[in-house]
Length: 290
Image (cartoon, rainbow, N blue to C red; front, side, top):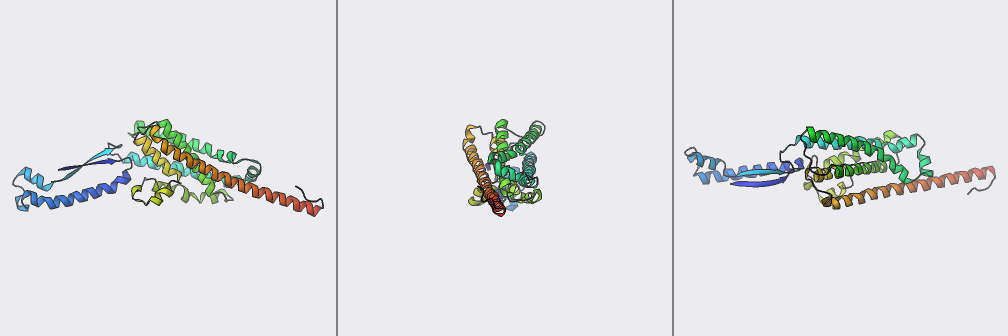
């Protein structure tokens, strides 16, 4: 008897434990059925067909969907490609606020600039990262037998937006940092959790629902989701509308948080500057200054 198992192998880490469990169950069933079907251990060897049936009465036949060759090496390479790319880009954005403070540009931007001008600073880093990852994927697809079924331009556009989201989260984490080194220390909260909760190293289906909900706030988790849906499963734009809309809402929410923090700090700094001028005017006897 053959038992067929259809596995979505776009996430090899998610199915590894399941394969082991299936093989263990089959081995147990085979041991129980062997004696009863072949008439006992003493009957083995008398007939070749009966011996084969007794030794292996039940087998599992696997069919790997979206990964028919069962290649785990290229999947591992892509996972680490996304991980290290987002890590270096996130490290740069984590140090962005500290660099602005050290170079005395932060005060000018907060007092006279706009939140949009600050958030736009993350765009060049996301663009360079997208170009580098796109070039690497081209090489892997054409020379490394990497499977890619979807629209590459759709994936790269979404990957660019995840880079922008990664930069905005980095800004929020390092907002109070006074130097670049202090901002870099927040890397442990930015990218590594996404590598674990994004499905690259563990079966995300076994996690509690609240863990999966919280993981949606990590940009790298969305990168792995887009890769599996577009790159491996080949889902078109119409089938991605729900996921894209959810991610755009998440990106707008991040921009709103950055804008609120920017507005709050600008207001506090303007109050401090006005108070300093009033105190200076009172000391000089010229009266309060508006």
